[in-house]
Length: 353
Image (cartoon, rainbow, N blue to C red):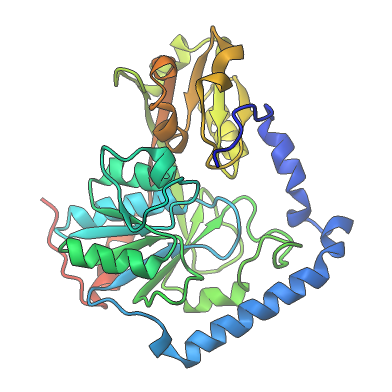
């Protein structure tokens, strides 16, 4: 069932406030501790089970790399996976991606993302990945089934999994975890009393720990991933504007829209770029309709790349929407680090042209 199009308009900071008990020692969090302890026990038992019974995990003939996290909520996994896919591709590596497809409405799996598959059907994140990387992307709630479909229908050198760090039935050679540089692991408690899916100690077994935007203070050997805004692109005709030009052309008649798990991040990013605009938040993976924009009949909209995948399917709205395209930057040492990492599991990399 699609989400109702009459979703309330919410300021991103109010969403952050509602989640704030995950990031401090609050009464609400303490009341949920019994459930949190039970969740932690289940996580521990499940992890130990797969550790002691590796034959229970399906292993692909090609290396599998998981890009996930140990906390709930958006940390920047998908942008990192896109960057990593592009990094591997320019080094001659044939990459395939598997994804859970959160928010998708399809009732047939596995589903390969293509230009005829809508974001509403496959999920906004898989559609974004396929659009930006041009590699095969297979969607299935069962990641093992997705990986099997991928290797049977495409020749790939490595499989990247968008999320799935806790999906232990899918064997893996490499694990990467993304941390929220601003929020870290919050109050350090497990769901639902806090944001943790797994203990921080789990990072000891992860091959690459990345912190989004700044050091999280959670892990000593984390790498900093800097978000690099590139330009705005019109969802109607593909026209581009530089950040500088957009600051001059977008007036106070402009509204930012974010249907992501951490909408305050988009609001902060725009503010740091010099855009003083109202920001409206929708639920994560929200399915937009024309009705959502009716009360803003004269406005221009700034949207995230993730939201753009669904909004551009609304022809009467797309021309008024500008998507902020972003890239990712690391220190110069990241190339050598990743080369050694992927070579260690048998992936052959060429020198970039």
